[in-house]
Image 1 (cartoon, rainbow, N blue to C red):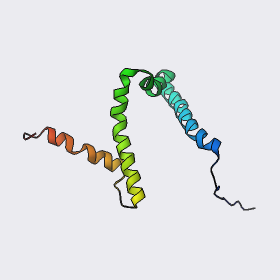
Image 2: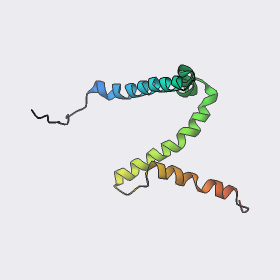
Image 3: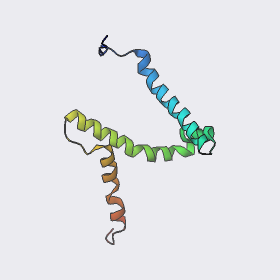
Image 4: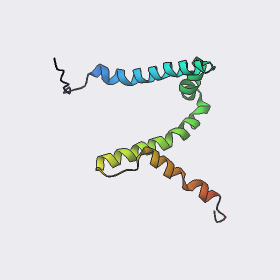
Amino acid sequence: MQFRLEKRREPSQFMLYATPVAAVALTMIVGAIIFSLIGYNGVGAVREIFLTPLTNAYKWQDLGVKAAPLIIIGVGLSIAYRANVWNIGAEGQYIMGGWPGPALRSSPMA
């Protein structure tokens, strides 16, 4: 008996919304288990990583500082893929974006 995979014409509306929620929930559960196994408070660590930056107004600027480069990388990748041109990838963009900064700041001309 052979199985044949066929692509759906339209994705399920339930799975469209349930998949990202399940991915985040599974990440939180696995993260709590891993932190607990290495000797930390797993639930507390997950709370500090996922919930505190959203609920504490003083952490919003940290969230923005960490999210801004990733958003810019995502926009750059989406433009490159839509235009069907070669791209150095997310890691390459991140490295090349941070590379000249320390060199320019330590320069006597800066």
